Length: 308
Image 1 (cartoon, helix red, strand yellow):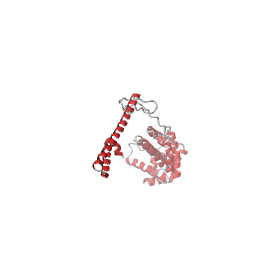
Image 2: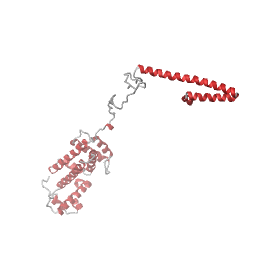
Image 3: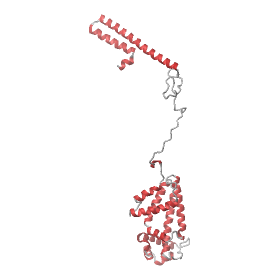
Image 4: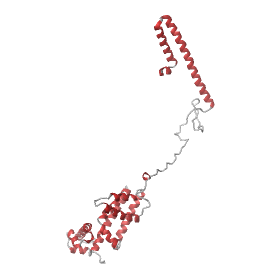
């Protein structure tokens, strides 16, 4: 491998030199995607619209051009990771970044394989790789803080998974965008949430405070004394046996009063009927007695007669 150092554009380089270098890099990226790494420098110069000498002045060999293209790609992904790092939804940003890495690597497969087989990382790309790993680690940590990504995932894990994702993407589709099988496997990095568990989480027993304000205390209907819990599970109706007896006597008094009222009503019916028969006789007397009976009965027990 040639050890020469390519001519790099510095702050004092002429504007046209910087422009030519950018044109060569852009043309090289497209050529490597279409034809692989076997494309010639002359073809790259033709695509860039510059002379072959211009390409050689910036990149003495194809290896130097390959390194420059690879570094350009790594720096672009590093900038993307840093831009996603402070996103409000770090989880969505992390998975969007992973999808971009997978889909953009397909077109650079030959370039990546070349460096894998020839010793990665090279010295010229080591710093770019370190910057990428640092940015990826920061984005991963941001997503883990929001519990969007598995807490046990590390940067080496993610880099190894990228290799598998790219392989799945390559054999699954030739269309732009993330292939469905790759997207399904990408979900393996997502944190497990309660909604995704098969077994429902056990609900903690609700604490009960018998003295809380929402537990309204019942009152004795006789003396209005607060009722105490009986301890048997059945709520108490009276505060004491004495109040229970008083309530019992009241019920019997009401029943006796109702019976007496019925007797008075019957006597009134008889009296009214007798008087009506004596005055008018026949059917008219019977109707008058019935009407009187209904009126007296309604007065004695309006609720009962209304119901009937």
